[in-house]
Length: 244
Picture 1 (tube, rainbow, N blue to C red):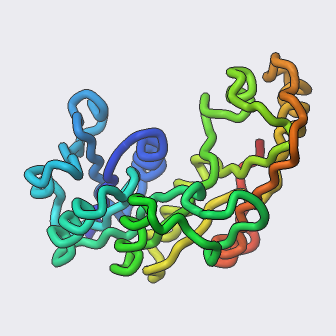
Picture 2 (tube, rainbow, N blue to C red):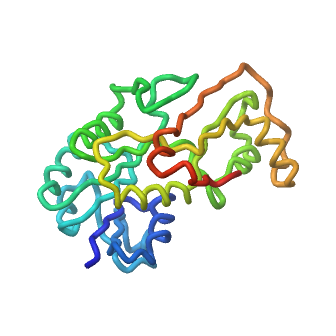
Picture 3 (spheres, one colour):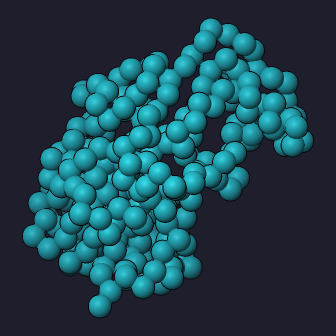
């Protein structure tokens, strides 16, 4: 018998996740939006849900695994939603961001200090204490959302800076793997484990004729590396991350 899987929030990652799970025989997939008729028009099992509107909590099917794709805030609503679903469902995974770490340089692991006064981190910590896996996502790319485009739009000001990346396909693959695991109450960094310098990304884009702008200025070195050894140990050393 298929298990219910509810994808809370279907933005960029959520829509890729729906696609990746459409042929999965283990789960009956539901997806939510504050405006499902508009944002999920092509998806049959669409549900209206708004964390801020407690009247929509009843729309979540019972006995579900839940993936939270939007920021886990405000804390009071996260607590109320958890209390509502906890007797029948599990908030298995919550997507966070590596910007929640306090340190702006050096190697960042799951033990690195967090911005504890940040409302999103407070919500994530509450969920983690109550069983959820918190996936700290590096810069997400895939499809038209690509570092080459960020360069072409002039968004990058320092070529002497690193960027930590994770492809949306890797996010979907890892989520699918973790859904079937017994892991709980953990924080896990998601990154491809590579040190990407913007001047190297620019050179690669130019060589492929996909970057048409000048290389950004070379300013002060800004080096931050998101360590992904924990997820590599979980999914296996032979897992191959997407490449730029």
